[in-house]
Image (tube, rainbow, N blue to C red):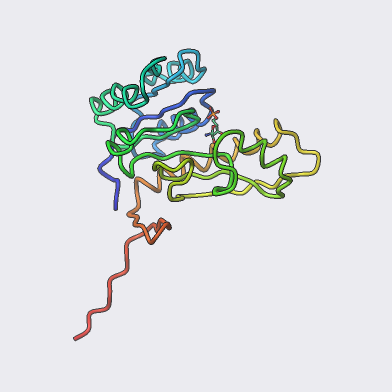
Length: 214
Ligand code: GRF
């Protein structure tokens, strides 16, 4: 599969938005071959909204309704993205799981970054749990999103060693630094190289042709 037909992408984020900013700067430097059409947040107070405006990227907040189901929350998100011709969705600290309606509207076209070496420490507080567990190496993972929590096929990973005396804050800062390089690089690769699945493994590059026997 090759995603080269993607001209516009959207980023969904709920928090600070440091990964959003790394992606936005990479796109402005043309290191990512697609423009960021929209930053969508589900939280009106998310600092990422201000970051987007500062970078000249359209930012919208569509909060999930208090009494509505997630399916109903997601319909306006899908409409916003489809109306802008968005072909790729990047989750960057988006604190909600996506419903099947959203997943099928963007099948194989939703990526996420997670602050651990998956499948270790999926879900919340991956950094704190890695530290508490005493693992010597953690890191970050970019993966395709499916309906399993942080369980979709892996596109790229980077390792971060946990040092003696490490605090949660110091480890989080070092993982963030690595994320800011890994996510743009992986999006670029995903958009520029053909890829295919071999079981759970994503293989980049053109498939080699079977030799023709005469
Ligand atoms: C990142 O650590 C990312 O891996 C996780 O949420 C965090 C978001 O940080 N999914 P930021 O909002 O991009 O600064």
